[in-house]
Amino acid sequence: MSVNDHQCVARSPLILCISGMAGTGKSTLSKKVAKRYNLRCYSGGDVLKELAKEDGCVVTGEGWWESPAGLDFLERRVKDPQFDREVDSRLLSYAKLGNVLLDSWTMPWLLEGGFKIWLMASFDKRVARVAVRDKLTFEQAFVVLEEKESQTKAIYKQLYGFDLGEDFTPFNFILDTDNLNADQVFEVLCRVIDNIVLGCQ
Image 1 (cartoon, rainbow, N blue to C red):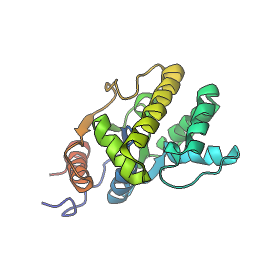
Image 2 (cartoon, one colour; image 1 turned 45 degrees about the vertical axis):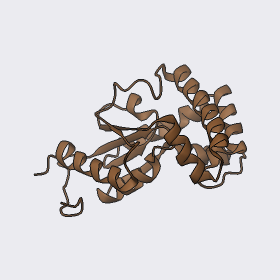
Image 3 (cartoon, rainbow, N blue to C red; image 1 turned 135 degrees about the vertical axis):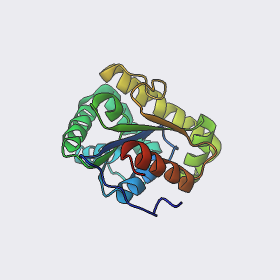
Image 4 (cartoon, rainbow, N blue to C red; image 1 turned 90 degrees about the vertical axis):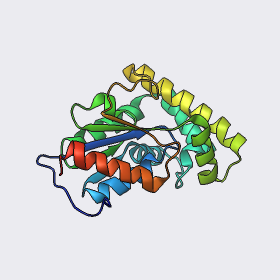
């Protein structure tokens, strides 16, 4: 049966949170899932980009975080936690509205309630995906992703004390995407949401 064969309606305001390291496809997937369930979609990365623009950065499209400008802004975030605190404050306020999907690294730990999903993939698989997406060599993507993730993990460890990509205690469902394409991941998550979250028959 296709995920489009029926529509399920939540009995109470629905809050989903999708998280996963770069290259797991979480941002694209979040938009598709939000559309499927008629949810407002809010991305922590998009909010951070808006704050970067307000702070004078020239922000381009997909792959900006792995660009020199994106990595420079990451350095500024390491030195000044105001950016990340503001993002999390906004996302928590959006969550209170209900019927939302949050694409975020921090909300699984900071948000009470909701259904929290972690997308897992090996580092090499994620590097390969980022290389294709950003038109980099595998070696270039490897170096960039390693630096980005090391600094990002340090930010959240300092701010909130959790280990991003290592602590999975907040999550209701973990999906290994290494051997799944984007359509298959979407299919699996829709079944999980229909059957576990919404209790559809």
